Image (cartoon, rainbow, N blue to C red):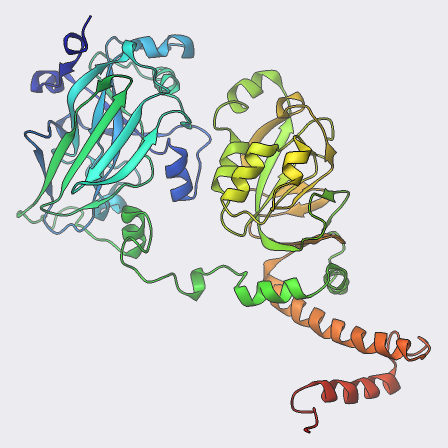
Length: 505
């Protein structure tokens, strides 16, 4: 059977028969990382069938950016077209209900996102906001985990991803939706967009293509025009702000915005980080105890790079004890462990709660390497590490309880991320400051970090003086800690060390 015979064109008649368009919010790891959130389960919204339209490279369709709107966002997506109804179908049968695969553009105006409390009725439901086509790829002739989606904006390739590592495979979407509602023949499921979606302006052309094996949807081309009819004053009117601009363009830089102000900056400034790196963990521990914080050390771990000192903000991951039925739903695919690794940012430290369970690995060479490539400062786990030699060869330190060859599923289920956890006897929250070296690992509440480290610097200066005095033969009696006499001598010594107190030649 030839490809030409099996491939059909999307027609207006087909679109007219479509009763439902259901879209997935986040499904690609790259998009989740860009948004800074990874859902545990798929979530959806509806688009009206009246938003459907056609478009091809030879005859681009058009979409109107409504008058008064600034942010018409485009999102290249793979569309699934149901060939037979589905109600309460299982995962193993779900894909057989899909007849066609094609390209789609999930267009929407960010200017109206505020208006409908997340339903996207107006922001995503406008006429022409769901172009599909031009060609239909037979679903039974392609592997749903081996499809490719690409998007061009004015000829520049801006999105290029595959379905290999989706958060929620296509069969899961069909089966999940069918639990509650009947999917009917001709219904369309939009399966999410990868990173790279942005904003199109009047005159711009957006093209999208889906390929799988020898099949192609062809390029779905849509040209943006400027609307001229203003919104009436009896409904929601367009409005936007820099938060929406950042969301629409994908970053503040892409939106042409200045970097976030001090209020949005990390508490761990370069200056604070340098101070924390300059003082010993023993000194930090002493100052934490003076503030009544006696339970802020992560204990019982060893390091692959004991020569390194690391300072970073905590990201967290929790494992729960393995239960076979739950591992089937939470242990495979792009699970919480992989999501945590794939979203850790430059300079952050991924802290894992493994309940002190030493009978299996909680991280291995591939995921540790991925964390290093993403710029993680360290990984900390109170469980085991697999592939120890390879992990130890990485530049990034890993702190762990012991090596163990067993895979994660022997004892654990990766459960959730960026929550308060327990690791090595200490409570760790996302955003806590972690300081680790060969002496140990400390968890520092960010609110006290500046004051704490300044007192540490002062303490170490005093201890330098005490060390010198002992080295000169003085007794520690009255010197350590210093009595009033030694405090006076220290004040003189300290003044002589400062630039103002130093004598000239």
